[in-house]
Image (cartoon, rainbow, N blue to C red; front, top):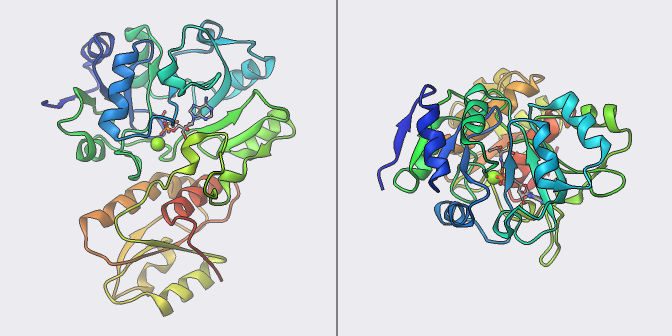
Length: 337
Ligand code: TXA
Ligand code: MG
């Protein structure tokens, strides 16, 4: 299959491919997604094939507005509309009770469904033109870092899908936050573009799922099935060095081998002359860390570094999502300094 590269003006073509059962790479504000008509089980099945994604990992549905919740979900709580009013369109996915028209293959048989309304003009135009909810996981091959540019998605999906729409680099850079509204108190299943602090401001108490901060043991089932898989991982093993930046930089400088890879904050880049360096941005700029983290991880796959050492932000704001992605890329191999 020849994967066509479309641009932001090719909205009707992208929507037509989706409606006819094809797969389209779509830009969102978080990461690129691999979209299919969420009402067409065969099309959705092709997503799992193209990504090599385990069948027990459900997909989220992308819709153009909160008006669509009623149609695809049941017993929608008032809090869902409150959150939508505050954060949609935007990087927040809500887990709600699934309506009868949502195919089993989308939810991997769960009685809940993830709903997201992305904030990217090209994506929104495609969703409106398609007129169907679009099932879309991140557009990477299963296990690899999520793509934040059309070129990254092409690396993984060239020849496997019908088209990719280039909507420029993603503004947020990490995936949406996932909040489960079917439990009390609401539970954060994956930290993301909307922060835990923002969610608590609206909802009051919010629990944080264990899978956010630690490795799931064999047989343990996180509420977001995808959180149990090794993810975001480059080919070389990653070690996260957690702690105050000045100390983690010194620790890495003392322990990294010649020719290793280092992910570090800008201020410390000069401390690793014998290593290949990817910068995350200034130490306290969590939004920049979020934009850079997947590109940094992915960049090492073009090198032959034998090991990667990563500095890690604190967990305030977007730092929680960045820390979670780095820890997962490291298989929770973390050194505390
Ligand atoms: O920002 C995003 O959310 C991106 C863009 C493309 O929208 N999408 C994305 O999808 O990250 P994906 O499939 O890579 O991650 C979705 C996560 C998975 O961990 C999956 O297990 C979880 O959401 N999930 C989906 N449906 C669920 C459900 N009904 N209950 C619990 N977790 C669910
Ligand atoms: Mg993903």
